[in-house]
Amino acid sequence: MKRVAKILAVLLLVGLCAFSCVIGPLGQQRVVQPHIQMKAEELFQVGPVPVTNTLIGLLLADLVLIGLFLAGTRHIRAGRPEAMVPRGLQNLVEAIYEFLANFLRGILGERAEKMLPLLITFFLFILVANWIELFPGFDTVGLIEPVHEGEGHAVRSVGPLIFLTHEPGEYTLVPFLRAANTDLNVPLALALISVFMTQVYGVQALGWGYFSRFINIKALTSGGFMGLMNFLVGLLETLSEFTKIISFGFRLFGNIFAGMVLLLVISSLVPFVAPVAFYILELFVGAVQALVFMMLTAAFTAVATAGHGEHH
Amino acid sequence: MEISPEVMKLLAAGLAIGLGAIGPGIGIGLVGLGGAQATGRNPEASGTILTNMILAIAFAEAVAIYALVVALILLFVA
Image (cartoon, rainbow over all chains, first blue to last red; front, side, top):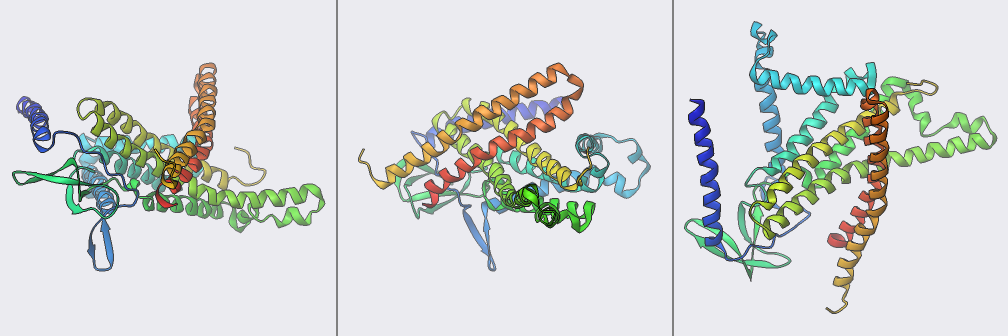
């Protein structure tokens, strides 16, 4: 059976390649220049809420992640005895969790346990949301709509399918699916959660005295030049909390948006073979950005929860 | 090509991210060099070194991100 499945998979791949080789030239003589837009495209409205293609990408990422982990932990949740010896998917899920948890315990020490759910969710969500972009159909399949701004393309239909052509016209493509992190709102929301939770953990660890790192009245009243300097350092510290939000948000957004643009441009320059190398690069970038987001949150939390005079 | 505001905008965006990436590029390279050397000298400490390395890279990279923000604002907003 496994052999048959393998042969079928290979046949499917070859068929897809052949299909794209034939249908590509049929649809157009030259490759379409990609239309790059920073704002997420709006597909339709549900009541007052506009549904954008990045929202659908986000929900898809959620669905994949929640589905994987619900399926992986079903024996544990049912309390079945076979959960004691993990097999198959449960094994994978447990291995992922163990690896990340041990990695974070190395950074945070005994404080890690309380923060593990948030940090590991950050990592897994960003990873899945980034990697899902690499599936075929993202950014390429969608509605053909009249163009509002910029250059449009003429369309040409092949059977029931409609393709954009390289000739100028008045239509543009609004893709159904787009990676969540190419919409600035998602990385910014993650950044806000990260920075806010850092404050929460800081207060939990140090009490209200945590805020003396921002407004250091004790240093000011102790007087002297150094006291004043320490007070000013506290104000700088306050400012750096806000720049953290910006750098968290734009780091993730910039990397993933640039990745999307890179893939689109390369696919339009050299449609075959060449994009493969960049897909591998994007796999790497997606994983690194997820790791960096988690690690930075962990490191900032470690700094915030370490009191004065406590050395770790 | 005539020098119009549109052209200047594109040029400015390119220069902003291009020049802004030089410093962080050198910085991240130096951090990587330090990290690799440190791991070579003391392989047992590689976990701690990786943590600190990624933290330092993130701080250097933040500067490039500010340049990116400026370039994006020039391209899409201004």
